[in-house]
Image (tube, rainbow, N blue to C red; front, side, top):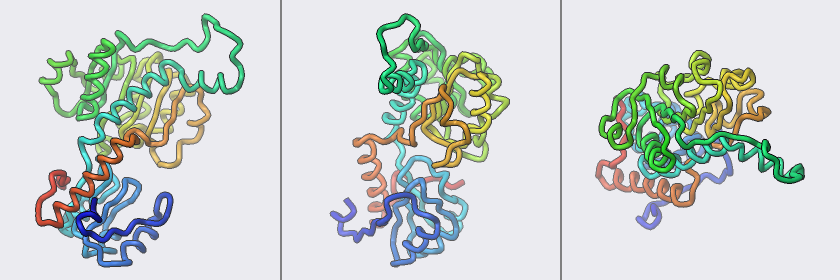
Length: 307
């Protein structure tokens, strides 16, 4: 898309995450006008200063916690992201994880692959229904709302939510109930996290909050890893403080907290909630469009506010 518009495009030749040193070295190679960066690229003052000619950094993600917005603002650099186009795929992944952990899909799959199946048994891999249960949504932005719609309409779940702002329109549409965080955690059979990572949301779900969750409840996170205190979660799972968890994001990616992968009551995926052909294609196009509009003298539709 960028090349079709006549732009010269350089792509990193490394297959994997760039170190900061590699990123800076690449950016110093030419006087680039724009940078399309990934959420694994940690963009700070030093990175901005490595390519002073670039006045736009287009993030290939909705979240912008990988970028120092203060440093960008100080240098007059525009930051854009890719909201909207990944709402459906991330919501689908959250729902897939809800089912995977509640119905023990991963355990059962491994059981079959290990050749342990000897025939139908009435108590084999008993899980839990979702229909009629209470789903607590921590965050009711685009993705949280998409999950609410599907689980209310499709599975007749009672939906409760916590957010900094109430959404009375969605409350009426999907019969949602607003709760404070403590009450939500205490009342939910399933808790699904959908908040951005900010200083205020880091470890929003910590040891104290995990102890509020029912021992029969499940926790799902498709937002950002540091929203949950991962070490506290491991301990809660070991102590059966909660029944299970399903995670697509981790506190220090690509690392996981010690002991997490050894637990039988977790489902783990490698940050792939937006990983569909359709969504990743749309994200690429939107990131490119943001650059094209900016370099064409227009204000991109997806400029990140820096206040």
